[in-house]
Length: 178
Image (cartoon, rainbow, N blue to C red):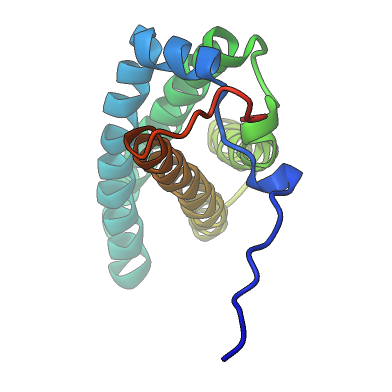
């Protein structure tokens, strides 16, 4: 039998939140706002995706699809603005805080594609099919970005569970780099 090697902690495996950041996260109203807006935005996304696919399949319901994409984009703006405020409260900066740097980078792409859709829609620079293709590209990036944030939420929960186990076992985490 060989002994199992336990890898050394690396910078990438450090906790998402310091104790102060965790306290600020838990005390912030913006955490609740994000928790409400995220599923609302996902629901709007699902409805809108259905309307887009309906239009692409039947060539009917263009206006409904377009309106739904505008609503989806507005919910995206709302969650991005409030998320930036949340990040400022928790980490002291509006964007690109260490734990969410890559999610924020990808969020900029999501915003750019959604905004490009609005510009194209309101300037009439793309035909209906091209608009729907742009919307679908924006939605693909949104799904990837949502997955990034869900992964971070899972990591935060695992980190918290690990801290609770360590405390229950009498270990002190005060010296950790979290």
